[in-house]
Amino acid sequence: MKGTRERKREHLEICLHESVEMERQTGFEHYRFLHEALPEIAPEDVDLRTAFLGHQLAMPFIIASMTGGAERGLRINRHLAAAANKLGIPMAVGSQRAALRHPEARESFAIVREEARDVPVYANLGATQLNRGCGLPELRQVVGMVDADGLFLHLNPLQEAIQEGGNTDYRNLAERIGDVIGALDRPVLVKEVGAGISPRTARLLADQGVAAIDVSGAGGTSWSRIEALRSEDPQRRALGLGFAEWGIPTAQSLVLCRAELPGMPLIASGGIRDGIVAAKALALGADLVGLALPLLAAADDSSEAVQEVLLRFARELRLAMFLVGARDLKELRWGQHLVAELP
Image (tube, rainbow, N blue to C red; front, top):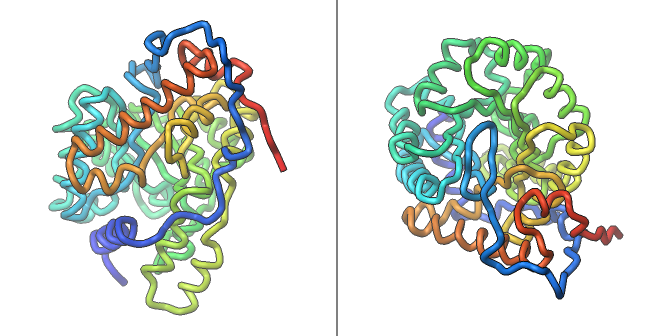
């Protein structure tokens, strides 16, 4: 069985060089904005600033968890973190499991706080590690490694089921998450990795006291496909490809979770590839929009390249808000700006 660091390196290579996106769409294509020919504002009136878990942000974006632990991951994380700091948005690191086992991998995570000195940084660990002996000492290690403002616990049952030697013990995990929330002195957030969060799961997490949820729905990167491409076992590869389109589309997951939990901070990620779709997610109830794959190739290049991608998203979001007459994100979210065009 390959080690964690080698697996992370393979994940990066596949995401950079292979087709890893789902063929199915995110669900946002079923919504259209109502264009206002008389918006009664000017573009410079549009304010993208927002607050999230007590932090003031320049834009409603978060750099979602991607990598770390691999040598190439250090460069990518440095560029992502520098861009986040420059533009005033938060960043979440990739899974830090490798760094718990291999101290030499910690630099690829620690670099994030070195570069992102003035914005929120979120640590990250697989939730199933709580069923494999990972306790408060280990969680405090991953939080301390990046001087984190909070901790993401990620849920990825499909990926783990396809991955050779994956961690599929999800028994009593909600209760264990609740125990962590009660003992850790930082906010605990929970996310999927591309298959979506159902209302039932959202309610389970809310009842345990999570600070925020990233729905991370279907329509973007397929981790089942990635694990299939990694596998040398024909049966495992076939299984991964068979489930490559599995999951709740991002828009549907967002709408269902917002209806279930009206007051819960929600992040929408999964297949959001431009600022217009980001605007739809915010209008449907997201507090932030998470971006990962659209930034990866740029992050392999430079911080400036990452900034340009993020600024393109911001320009598109600002223009969409101007064209519907929304001065700020509150007006975008609570205005009647979207029309559903369901089949």
